[in-house]
Structures are given as C-alpha cells and as structure tokens.
Length: 443
Ligand code: SF4
Ligand code: SF4
Image (tube, rainbow, N blue to C red; front, side):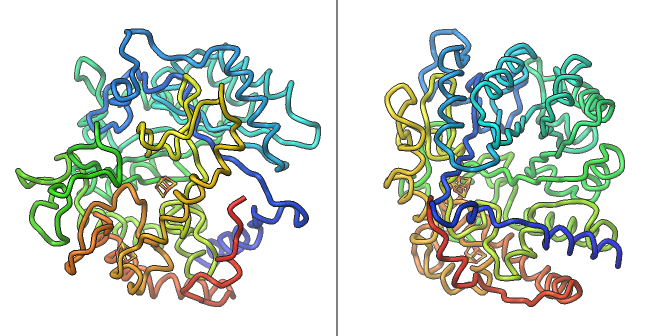
C-alpha cells in the first residue's frame, strides 16, 4: 500500500498544468473527436448512441461515409496549425475507425509529419472494438505509438449480451483476439467498459476480469444513459412530458414506462457499481491501475479542477467532427441543433473558440439547479454531463442529472477514504475548487 501511494503521489506531482503552456499567450488547445467513418461500424451494439446518427445526419444514400483525402489533409493541417501547444493529440473514433484499413492511417501519419513543426509532438488515440486488429495493425500502432482505447464490457457472457454483430452473435472472441495483439506488440491501451442494466450488477466480476485477464492498466467506465427519444431529440430539447421528477418509479430502466431505454444503468446501480470497484481498487490496486473517476476525485478533493469534462465546472473543449467535415459541440451533442459549421466554410479555431461554444461550455455550471448548487459534492460533480440532465428536482426545477442519486452515493462513500489518501500523500484537502483554478480562461 505504501509503495502504491508513492506511485500515486509521483503521478500527481508530475502532472503539468495544461492551461499554462505560454503565460504570454492564451493556450489554444483542441481535442476533437474525429469520426472518419461517421457512424459506420462492423458490429451492432444494442446500446450504441452513435449508430443512429446515420439517419439523423442524412447519410441515407447507401454510401458509407469516409473522410476523403482532400478533406483529411485539410483537417490535419488546420488542426495542427490552429493550436499553439507543443503537444497535439488526434482522437480517432467512430463508428469503427479500423474499417478504413491500415493504409488510411499510414496516410494520416504521413500528413501529420508533413505539417507538424519540429518542436511539436503529435500523438494519436484510437478507439476501437478491436475486432479487425491483426499483426499488420499491431506493427503499425506500435511503430507509430498509438494509444488504443478498446471497448470490452467484461467476461464473455456479459460482453456478448449487447456487443453483438449484425447476425446477433457475440463479439467477445474477436475483441479478445484484438487485445492479444495489443499485448503482443506492447501497445499502450485503456479499456472502455459500458455500465448498463446488466454490467451494473456485476462490478466486481468485471473489474477483476479487466485487471487479471485483460491486464488493463487504465479502466474507463461509461454509464449508459439514453432517454427513449435519444435518436431524434437533442439534449436540452426534451419535451415537457419526458422530464420527470427525481424519485419517480419511471426513472428505473426496468419500469415499462421508463423515460430511459431498458438497457440503461439505473442511478442506484451506477452508485453501487462505482463504490464496489472503488473498494477493490483501494484495497489492491491504488497507484497501479488508473480508474479515471477515482484519480479525478482525488484531484477534486485537493481543490484542483477536475480533469474529466463530465465532472468539471466547464465543458465544451472536445468537439466532434464527422466524415463530411461537419463539426459539433461535443461527441454527445451530434445533433443538427448543435452543429457549429463545416470545415469547408469555417476554421476549426473559429468554431472551437466561438462565443457560442464558450456559452455551451459555461452553461454546464450556469444552469445547475439549486439542488446542485447547494450540494456538498458540487465541487466534485458539477451536475455531471448536461446530456443526462433530464430530471426535475423535488422542487420542480429542471436540469437535474438522471444519475444524481448514484453520484451522491459514490461521493459520500469515497469521501473519508479520499481525504485519507490525500493526507497520506502529504497534500492538503480542499474539498472545493480553489479560486485560481476557477479563473482558467476558455482559450
Ligand atoms: S456535454 Fe458532457 S461529454 Fe460533452 S464536454 Fe460537456 S460534460 Fe463532456
Ligand atoms: S451529486 Fe447530484 S445534486 Fe450533487 S452536484 Fe451531482 S447531480 Fe447535483
């Protein structure tokens, strides 16, 4: 435990403040989720929030969207030119980006080298279901130092429930074969695990599987929350009748008239899932395995800005770009109402740092209901992601997060342990965002 705490202390001490790269110039940094295949995927996960974008965004002509050569080059050039940071990170997502083949990404790397100035480091992150990974991919990803996010929901039975191909067959074996490729070529990877109505009840089994069998050193857990109207209705555009009060039985995904899809995690499941994983992590793996929610909470309790957009006071720094060049406020806001423009007509810089996008980002805190503003865990939560704020408080105020009960359960469970960890590391506990951190500039 002492050694593990030392590792955690070293990590927190080494952490640079990304907002202060050049004190004489506001930092222009972008983190755009790039979807070069749009929503096209080789599997058909039942809970996927992105497959339905095909219809919503008008890709109805049967052609599979691909970011074409000319646009790809223009995008890579401007993404590099319009940032003034020494480290530029490309995020490749989908749909499934590996459908484009290794040669497409060879071209990506060639273009990045062509346009990156000497003093700038380029990094690439790729999110994949792992199914197409083979030796050719392994060599390419290793050689070019890609960080891979691999989607896996747990052991075979659990993974195969929702992560199925178009014939309805589970995809575990192919994904696990992809993970073996990542190990074979020593590729840096993180696991991304969706917490839904089923996985929500199997926290320990899933965590131990990811740790012991997948040998994941970084585990991201994503709560699956989608209102029934998510395919057509943008967040904050919900109809009145869809917005129900906290505590009503229709919040539960298993209720026949639930406001959310049946495969969603319930607030109490989410809280219990996080608490169970936290206890196991604290007993055995602190400092060895990075669970972003836990490490981010330590930072929040220390008075730092939460590094996770969902739990930070402000969001809006991670745009999404579709294969046709359309740019949206966030990966979770790919709806016509939140389109910022197209890179053929506007610069990335103008869209990322526009007044509208700043307003979008600041609304996260500005629109918190009283219940959140008076919550003892506001400093660690900030009402979580606005896309999940479709519940009314008991006072009848809109804008409460569906997962509120689960977050409260988690934060109150970890409170004393996080304070102990911080004190053991020799830091002070603040339990609130400090004033300087709140003054971070949007750019
Ligand atoms: S909308 Fe949600 S996911 Fe998007 S930046 Fe804001 S908090 Fe993050
Ligand atoms: S725990 Fe609930 S009340 Fe507290 S800030 Fe988060 S969403 Fe709001």
